[in-house]
Image 1 (tube, rainbow, N blue to C red):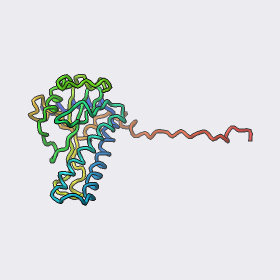
Image 2: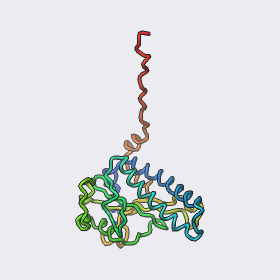
Image 3: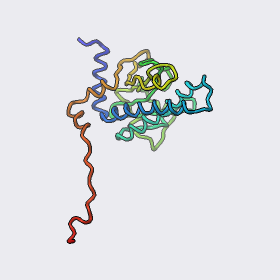
Image 4: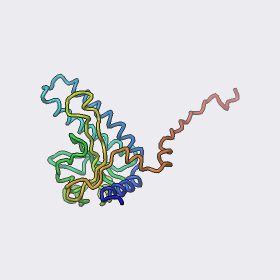
Length: 225
């Protein structure tokens, strides 16, 4: 019989596949690899950085690229997204959702590490009414993001290693993690391959179908010559 963690993961997978399109996970994975490579190239080429500060700059570059990516990829797949609803110390964080799922993103140094239990992540994990707590009621924000969800998770991503080199700073691990309400650990830990594999064969097959390109009609066609 499956243990508690397996049951949690099975339930989360069912909710994810019902609530989010498989194309979101595929697109996010592909673009995350590019974001990691671009962040490293940008910092490596910056000659106005002390050597000892390159890793700090890289963490910042990567954070902002991945924040933007979450909003952009979610929006591209008709998911709700906002970069204003979650704030801490005058910083805003990306927040996206669809159906019964809400999510943020976080860079961690090692795969599956528990991020620092910042107040807003505890609130997400508990499904609390965070927008009222912060007094944020933006009229033009997606209403669905204010609703309590079944799954409040974090996309965690990590590089291959810790050294400042192109090889070690490529994307090494990425997954969707759901914390317990008290943020004491992970109730579910799912890598992107697991998530994409959970979609039905029909959905996976449909996602592979290339859209047909409509050819503009030739004005010469149909003419009487």
